[in-house]
Length: 165
Image 1 (cartoon, one colour):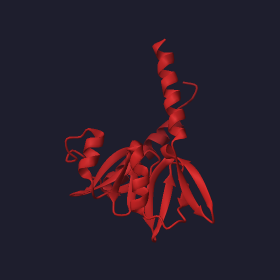
Image 2: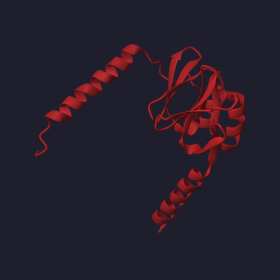
Image 3: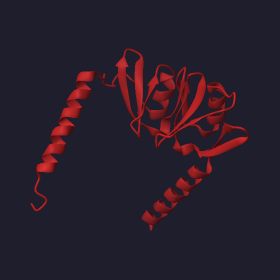
Image 4: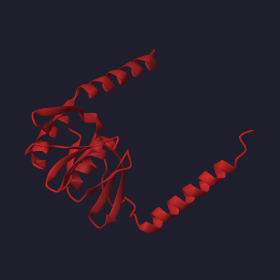
């Protein structure tokens, strides 16, 4: 009984998340409603505001709306944070926090995209219930290379496995 109730609540939460939409001005009188849950980040690129969705699709906002105005529009949804002068990020979609240098971090999203975190460290700590970001392991090219090699070795081991075993 509790399992069915939990499933029903999850389905309802998913439905309500899809109902929360943000209208994006596409120019020439056209707008596109986007489910807020699908917005991974919002970036300022070449002076234009670009909404980046979880599937990698990018939508350029055609109006004169700047990143501050977009931050204000996303504020009611509660999970968006200004992580950098040119980035807003959906904290609900953060998968990993990586330390690059002292005071500089990167937020890796569930879709693999990354967004710099150079400001609002306190808000990130509070959102994730962390006392500090000091425990975040520094990341460097050597670590990335080692992880890729281990994944490659693992993939080769799996391919060598006999499916009849």
